[in-house]
Image: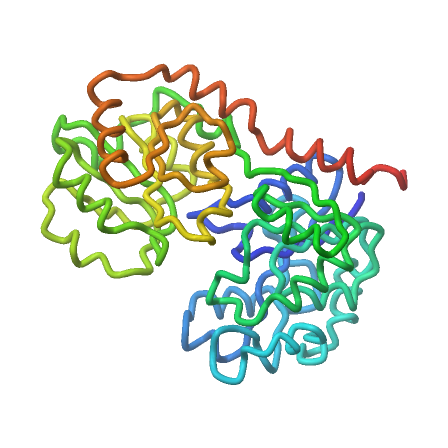
Length: 381
């Protein structure tokens, strides 16, 4: 079998989120690859931040194949030093030769796992630059899902980002707004917006979620991370001005105190990926209430495709990349327009089939086939 190493920000077997690299990994599997999924490195500092993460990473750190799924194996290196937004950890030089901080010798560990020589090295997490120093590969693909320089988790990352772009055989960007960022390094990137696992979300006849059974009001839903880009004031206005229940699904990493006393606002927390289709199937409106900024303007929202595949009307802020998608959704320039669009859909209805067809045309498999063809991943057969 052919081999691919994939570096991402989250775990392959995360129950909550299945982001782009997870789906590309599965496309590689269908194409007769076996995959090594590289988790973030760890040491005792991770224990104090998240014990569950620490013990999981420790369990996949030895020089053997750690089974995650059929033909998918996990690996998290133990490192004496970590990079991140922490004291004495913000220097990108740490990443440049990170392999020297890994114990035991990571070259030997990868050889023991038979992933020291691969067909494709696929890096999306720039923290994994060090892989290019220790792995022999036929093709190196750097996938840029977001403008990482806007994320506080990646201090001073521009230097590493540039090195990855220059070193890559092919660069994939999830947003056209990132094209100039790559082109200035004399690389012509392949623009592949995020996609959807269409069959997973295009389901009917599922059981009604228990949280939906309490009353017969219309249902507005948001699914995704609730972080500093989430427009809490907009969501509060929706709950106050629209006669509907508002459901928020996802891990919350920001303060939602202002929403606590709204009787029609329900914070459900994270839900399993397999359970999301039911929540979407019985929702009336799905929203993307992001604060407009350079960071969110460059986002290609996976949730938009997932919402559409479930046949749910979508209202979003006028994020630059979202506007360019020309999707059959409602785009608002301010809070008033956003709420008006929600009320319009609730009153007038919409064609679910149009939405589903848009989802069908934007599958991850179609994205993969285009990437494979343009980067000639089969030319060594």
